Amino acid sequence: LLNTGKEKNKNNRPMTSVEESQRNKTVEATWKKIRAWLWKHPDPQVRAKAMSVRGKDDATSLHNVCQLPNQPDDIIQDLVDASSDSSVTWKDSHGWFPLHHACAHSASGKVIKILIDAFPQGATKQDTHARTP
Image (cartoon, rainbow, N blue to C red):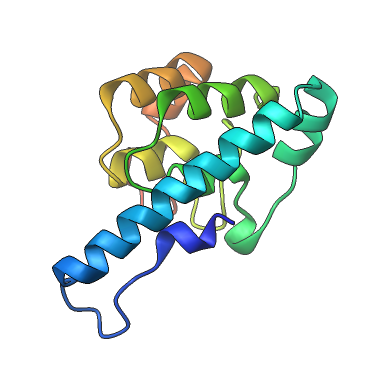
C-alpha cells in the first residue's frame, strides 16, 4: 500500500506532467486507503500492533508515510497516537527517525510540530551521517 505512493521515474529524470498527475492520484488514493484502515480499526491495541511492524530498511509505517508527499496531519497524528512512542523514537537502518523523512519530503509545519511534540529530542538527533532533520 505505501510503496504505491513512492513511485519514481525509472530513468531518474523529472516526471512528465502525465507521470506527475498519475503519481498524485496514486498518493491521494493511498491516503484514502490509510484513512479507511484507521476508521476500520479504531482499537488502540490493533493500531499499536500495526505500528510496531518493521519493514524495508527497518522502517515503520510512520517512517513510510513521512516519505510520501503532502502528508495529511490527521493521519500523522493518528499514527503517532497509535505508536506508543516506539515508531516516533525508532531509527530506521539509515539512522533516520520519522522526523528526518518528514523534513526531507517537505512536510507541513503542522506535521513537523506533531512529530517534534511526540519526540522533542528528535529535532537534534543525528542520522548515520551526523545530519539532523
